[in-house]
Length: 466
Ligand SMILES: Cc1cc2nc3c(=O)[nH]c(=O)nc-3n(C[C@H](O)[C@H](O)[C@H](O)COP(=O)(O)OP(=O)(O)OC[C@H]3O[C@@H](n4cnc5c(N)ncnc54)[C@H](O)[C@@H]3O)c2cc1C
Image (cartoon, rainbow, N blue to C red; front, top):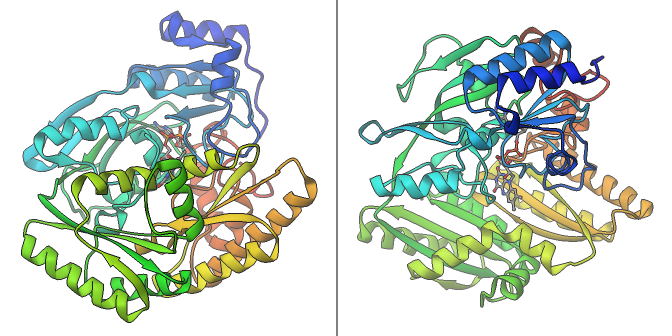
């Protein structure tokens, strides 16, 4: 794609559309919007704009399209694959000031929100109505960014990911046209589900300016257990057995011994340092929750668990989830001076144990320090690798290990990315994962964004074009 340089005339136009203090070419603002939370190198945009209305977004995108200037939407910048980086410069639209909850329809279990709302802040407000939005990536992400990456989290095993919890979207297309797609019904067979097309498209097909999200009642009661194993194989095999037993856990997370050690050291927990499962059930009846735990215990013991600690109280449970959400940050803190990358794949649950086993062997073989954890109930593996990324020999080994692990996941019918999106890092696997359907995706991209101005350089490998 050939883009035009950003000029003084473009800057004047932006300052006409929004107030001057919502447009910045200041170095510190450009730098703040040049990096997400990854190892990928940064890219400076030409300008950062903080829109407040759909009308402003529409006018800016229309202008950028006519002028052939890239536009990249920005939520909280917590992506892990370089997803919101302005690879070709241009305009970053930061949605921080479009952060209102527009309506809560508690009786319909829905809310209308702007894209800059942060889901953790929103859930505090929704909790007053006894409601919550279920997808919960660890970082305090925005709804727009979660839609961009189709984020998910520890609750996805019960409630689904972002795509399962968004009903309707308002989207600004590359032409500047504003569309509203989806309905307020919780199900629909009516024509193409366009809203779903935008979810997970990383801002490459359109810019979300409003979303109707689905809410759930906060479960009254919960039961939780921490389960220890001698080996990660025993722990991961148990995941399959639990999922296959008909028990419907509200969370089922796997953590290897190294990750548990870091949670103890940095998160001030006192867990037994073994491969561990965090298991939780939620519902309305204490009796049935107790029964679920009894059945889960039988399954764990049949698979070699060495300890099963039920009766985790509310406070301890909250601390556990907080530490689990912060696992990546705590690992970083525990390894000063090193750089990090998260390999995020997902496989059918039947292959989860093999996948974990393979990933562990690969990093050992390549002499790479790694921490394995993940949303096990969804077949999602996170492998945080730590090392000297400035060392070319290390990077060669890391590339080989990364490819081996992703290809292995694909060979099981899995995916190169369970929840972090493609961004820059996973582009090279897209052809292998999607085959000829990647060309169909490219045609959709060309149809909706013929000049390729929306978040260029993402998702598609360079040989296919951005
Ligand atoms: C410590 C840590 C833990 C994490 N844990 C998880 C996890 O458990 N699960 C998980 O899924 N992710 C996780 N992530 C990754 C990250 O938080 C998610 O991908 C999140 O959805 C990104 O949201 P954001 O608001 O930061 O978006 P950004 O990073 O700013 O943007 C994400 C993508 O969405 C696009 N975008 C932003 N706003 C819009 C919009 N209005 N319209 C269209 N596109 C838009 C951007 O261009 C970009 O492509 C974690 C990250 C960190 C740092």
